Length: 438
Ligand code: CTP
Image (cartoon, helix red, strand yellow):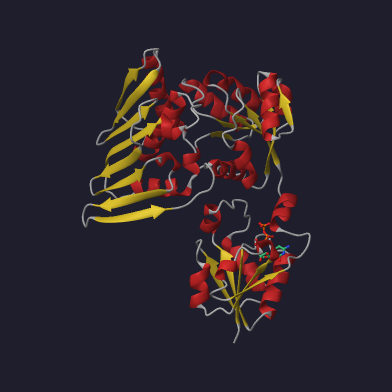
């Protein structure tokens, strides 16, 4: 018996998929089809898949060619599959030509010509509304929004606005965008989603004007330190039927979600202490991000992990000769816990996060805000367990995926976002830092 194996995502099942499965079956007597799992696709940055795993499996099954269907769950699974199922030949489309030659020592590899003029990507683009995204900026640094966005189907970065026409045009030229604007209203009329990355003092005005024109907004944080304004912005978004997102990619990373639910569950008992530290050197290599924007991230993480119901908070800062903040220690007191964040502008502190509970601890080393890995130590049996997940890029594409999901859905799905209560608590702390720094 000659066993054949083939792999694919098989999203929006089409003629090309049917043809390759048919030809794969003709290569032998028994066909195994590996369908990519959802977390595997997310990890490798393939974020546009529309059909669920169950639907994709059903569609493969319906062709009648597959004798066995398996799920491809991780990179490196092909060799154990080949050995386990005594595979004679791996069949794959010609778009992968040469990519699987390293498997030749395990079985025969056959690249079959792709069916012309059809792909899942093409179908997704025909099927989906394409949202036009514009960037508001006051410098010519992209922060990877332009490079990250194409990773998600259904969004296209079109244009850029800056108060300074030259900056807008230079940005456009650098990143090959369609058009630069210095008139905000004209700019808004040309797009559906606006990404605001200008300086703190201008953010609120840009958000308000965009929401009033019913444009979806992603804005760098913080955008206000007045609680009433935050409430007003959220209400304005709701009244205009648009989505407002704070730009905190960490909240949209799968493994951060996992960490959160484990920390809030009883895996380490009751939380006693959250300690985290961020240094400018690790957070922002290019040195574009102001202290307050950087401080927002650990504060936000603490609100998510320990909650927003703190009873007291303190800010201690060390200033540079010119009066700017050099280092800050932020403390939140809870009824039965304490959380601290060290934020350093130019002192090279060690970064990391530890959450201590009554029965165990969770640790994320180094750049914990780009969390891809954490470990849990259980005090009862001293066992250390590791959890990890890869993600591609700087995390922004996962935020884009969330906002598109939210825009396309009529329900409010935003589970990864920041709630009003959390926002209030964050804003209170940001205000304290502002007061101390003046
Ligand atoms: N395939 C093919 N002809 C096509 C499209 C896909 O033979 N026109 C083959 C691929 O080469 C692969 C299998 O079908 O062996 C599954 O491919 P998959 O990546 O799921 O489909 P695509 O349409 O290529 O998806 P995408 O556009 O998302 O890359």
